[in-house]
Length: 133
Image (cartoon, rainbow, N blue to C red):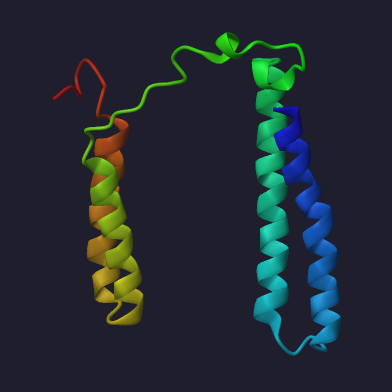
C-alpha cells in the first residue's frame, strides 16, 4: 500500500497550493471553491495517512513486489454480502435526507432515523449471540 499512500499523500501538496492560487485569482471573493479545494486536500491527506498506517500494519502485498507471481494474490480478499438489503436502505435514507434539505427540513429528521436503523442493521447483520436475528 506504499504506492497508494504516496499517491494520496501527494494530493495534499497539489490541492493546497491550488486552493491558494484559486483564492488569489478570485481575490478571495468566492470562498466556496477555495474551501472545497482545501477540503479535498485534507481528505486526500486523511486517506493517504490511513493507507500508510494500514500498509505498515499489513506488510508487503504481492502488488507491492516486482517479483510477485499472479497466484500469490489469489484467494479470499474479504467478506462481502451480496444479498444484503441494508446498503439500499441506507442509500435511500441519505437520498431522503438530501431531499429534506431541499424541500422541507422535517424530512431530514425522518431520514436520520431511517439511516440510523439501516446503519445498525448493516453493522449487526452477521452478529451472533444476543443480537442475532
